[in-house]
Length: 383
Image (tube, rainbow, N blue to C red; front, side, top):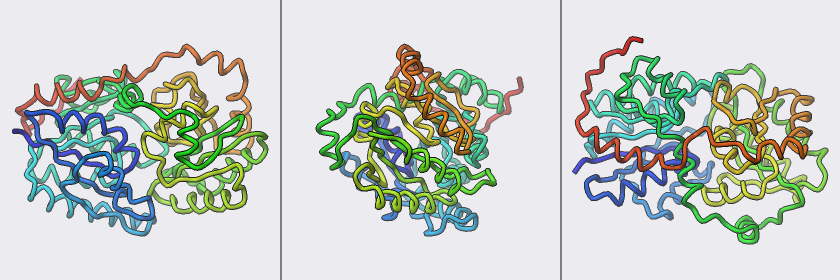
């Protein structure tokens, strides 16, 4: 029985991987191993390993690597700790294949350790571009470490091949986040309000803003511009989810906490909504504001506008419902006005998903089974 080791370090990543984890757990020919790391093990970020366990999945190993510092030195040392921790975990678990998603720093540590241990690597969401963050370099580095590639669009598949990966190892399966939207029983408005202990208003906005690690501008300036625009909106409530553990994430989270304290009637904050509450929330939002990849991948499925601020997601394929704007106050204000225009909302009602049809997890399982013998010796594929 092949041992398939899936690695997760964040709440969002686990939510995306959950359909795949369920299929792996239930498959009689494969043995699921689950490793939790990063923000999952940090009380500061919600200790979201509890979400994994409550979802019915066992955690085979915990790899502690996240320091209490989000400075450049702290992030670099966290990667070093990840390499060391994953080396020990692999020695104990002896997986036949590891599965990783995206571009987080702890995932870079995980694939470096796997490569040194001669363990094949399968990578989800390669070939994408995020020019405003060091995630860009990390993602492409993970691609070069990996042996199987599961991309979310054909454009990204071609880019992975452009990086020298053989076409026979690169598969466009769509965005795995759509699998959960398709299969979950989302909460009603009443049940959602009970779950967050907060009443929605006539208009509602979800805000998730992460640090932009390659920009000189401090996140406090951009996030303050967002808050200033929100202050001008009437009959509108706001749901904030916290920033991640990238450089300066803690500054943003402190600003969220201060704003909610000052505006308790119209705001609520969460370290993590969890997958069910997050996707359920999107049914009732008028706009999503920030710079999360979810604004480009999952939010368009609900036919609501995304205001994508800055360069963090620059280069990603995006629907017409995504309004990309600058960091300055005037640009953000104009984007919010556009998002609430009836003509704009009407125009996105019939947009089609650019990221597949919600069957990524099953495709990935089938392809993992089909590719049961992986040659670690890769040749660079020249175009």
